[in-house]
Amino acid sequence: MIKTACGLDCPDACGIECDIDSFPKIKADKAHPISNGALCSLLNREIFKEPRITTPRVNGKEVSLEEALDATAKALKEKSKVLWRGSGNFGVMQEVTNLLFEKIKGTTTKGSLCDGSGDAGILAGRGVNRILPPEQIAKADVIVIWGKNITVTASHLMPYIEGKKIVVIDPIKTAIAKRADIFLQIAPRSDFYLAIMLARFAIMGDHEDKEYLEEFAPEYEEFYDFTRGFRIKSILEYIGVDLHIMGELLEFILNKKVVFLIGNGVQKYSTGNFVLHAIDSLVATLGYFGKEGCGVAFLGNSKLGFNNPFEVKGKKVEKATTNFGDFDTVLIQGGNPTESMPNSSRVIEELKKSKNIIYFGLYENRTSSMADIVIPAKNFFEKDDVRLSYAHHIVSPMRKIIESDFGISEYEFTSYLFQKLGLDELKSEREYIEFWLNQCTKKGEYYISPAYQKIPYKNGFGEGESDEFEFIDDFEDYFETNKRLTKARKKSKKEIISDEYWLVTPKVNNSLNTQFKRDNKITIHENLGFNNGEKIIAYSKWGEHEFIVKNSSSMRKDTVLIYANAEGVNYLTPSIISDEGNNACYQEVKLKLKKL
Ligand SMILES: Nc1nc2c(c(=O)[nH]1)N[C@H]1C(S)=C(S)[C@@H](COP(=O)(O)OP(=O)(O)OC[C@H]3O[C@@H](n4cnc5c(=O)[nH]c(N)nc54)[C@H](O)[C@@H]3O)O[C@H]1N2
Ligand SMILES: Nc1nc2c(c(=O)[nH]1)N[C@H]1C(S)=C(S)[C@@H](COP(=O)(O)OP(=O)(O)OC[C@H]3O[C@@H](n4cnc5c(=O)[nH]c(N)nc54)[C@H](O)[C@@H]3O)O[C@H]1N2
Ligand code: SF4
Ligand SMILES: [Mo]
Image (cartoon, rainbow, N blue to C red; front, top):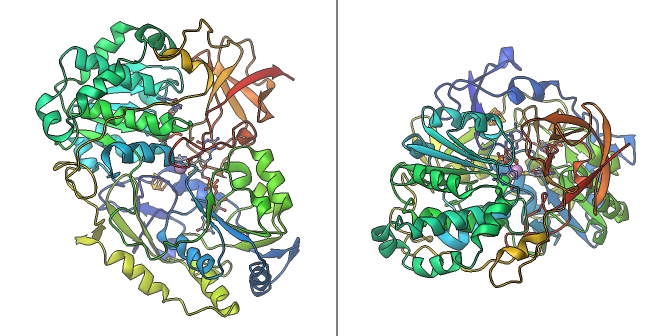
């Protein structure tokens, strides 16, 4: 029996037990503090059903691995080259290819398709983005699940919230919303205002934690002034809630142990950083940082506290809006940018301009179909690695379970190209893996991240825990009608245009981003006049695509849902970057729908 961990980009980072003789039958590692006895359907089923790329290709012709790698070496000698890495595998050894790009003076990327704006908002307030340990979630009385589809995207957190009072804030009536004590089905992209209003009402009612604030966040009066710069009535209308429910919600979370589980949903906007900063400012006002059973759990920084041997300097371009056409050679590793990046038609046009597209991955997809060179990768059962998590502090060795007779690991790939291009020797794979693990503490058979703190922010904020919390004091938003919501700006009567719909694009059960099962559905409010199963065109100023209608009573009338794995969804999304954090803004768009 060998223990390893799931490498998919998922916060749970479950432990796995494998018996080499019965592989691919695998089991959850029952002793692992997070996997609590069960894996999800992706590991139980989907991953083993998915056809792999087994043979390398150059210009459409099947070749040997050596020929494909030699063609890669030649392409990497071009003047300009970029490495665009996705998050198909969350192991730390994915990043070893950075060392290659450093040596050949290539470009890498900065920013994120995922959580960059939220992270920036957290850094603005707390100075450092620490993970709230799940055991603190377990000690809370009330859990506020805010823009996080926990039953789908972090199912192993479910036991931690069992039996607690639940508040859900989401434009969609999700499975967890159906079980919530309070559910606010707010308008998409209104979370900033909700957080600001809650903080304002809390201070108005004298509910701020003065003792805490004096010590850890003394600028709270300025923050109160900031919250008063927004118009209550028009904001509540915009969010789609009334005063009564705001009062009820506040009552529900006062003087208790409260954990806020914040998901990606709130920050897929240009203003995503402001949203997390506003939520954190609300939480600080209530004195809910640094206390047992309290705090905010967003997607944490899994590499916090580690020395990363793969961190390189050099030129970097925005990951979410990379202009592939600026480069002679594009190496795409562990990602599917023609489908996962926003504004697909732009991405495809840009890629067409590049001379050499190299795709290094496991599965065929639209990106592999465009590639000049295709290199099959090994999956995480076929190579050694180390798995960190963005939701807890367990660090798991990922162990090679089977010897695969095709494909190449990222370490072997880098090592081959180092040799071929006459670069210095790499350290051995084992040395890198040990370097990561040796930075951890050991607890029984598991490793714990060096960033682990039982109660984060207990002694204060910032890296050295000696800083104060910085409240939000600034907000800029140029999208849509939001301008009318600040007092300083002219009031306009313009209402939200009724035949334009907010797009929400959450994750779904049987896929992991664009890996595994895909669909082409659009879920809409049942009274919009479309029939179940009907084909429609959804379009935005960025592009259009055809989808199949699914009517649902879980939707708001002003919102449509297309899952993040849906084929074509990113033809509709904008290639813009968040105000801070260099993040993609998938939901900063309104759609129109037309019958076919
Ligand atoms: N509309 C919309 N789009 C979104 C999102 C959204 O919410 N809405 N979410 C965004 C988010 S949060 C994320 S994280 C991104 C993810 O987007 P990407 O990072 O592009 O990830 P995937 O689409 O899952 O593609 C991963 C690919 O990695 C390859 N792969 C898997 N394992 C390995 C390995 O071990 N080695 C190598 N070399 N390759 C491997 C597989 O072939 C797979 O096709 O998508 C973003 N796209
Ligand atoms: N099964 C499965 N699990 C996954 C993934 C997957 O593809 N499949 N992907 C993994 C990855 S890469 C990531 S980043 C995480 C992300 O996991 P989550 O953080 O849960 O993110 P999402 O699923 O994108 O969206 C979460 C919720 O936000 C809501 N939402 C959308 N817009 C808004 C808004 O404006 N305000 C509010 N309050 N809510 C809003 C959506 O309706 C949805 O319920 O999941 C990971 N886990
Ligand atoms: S995808 Fe997530 S929930 Fe499923 S086995 Fe992997 S880590 Fe666990
Ligand atoms: Mo993500």
